[in-house]
Image (cartoon, rainbow, N blue to C red; front, side, top):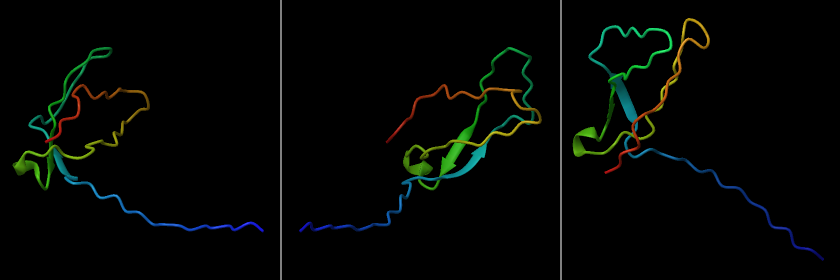
Length: 80
């Protein structure tokens, strides 16, 4: 005879310092076609004052026209 054992487990992942806001000092950003520009964004989380990097500050970008821009992260992760 063969013994079959099965089971399941629910797991919840919780970020240590989840993103709470994204801000910039710039009111409007204009970039000419086929050029690049850095965008100065400030990512804030609950523990930012303690020196922790914000966990996974990925953003969902939307555009008025598909393919109008390409967003690339130029800064590597920083962790406390």
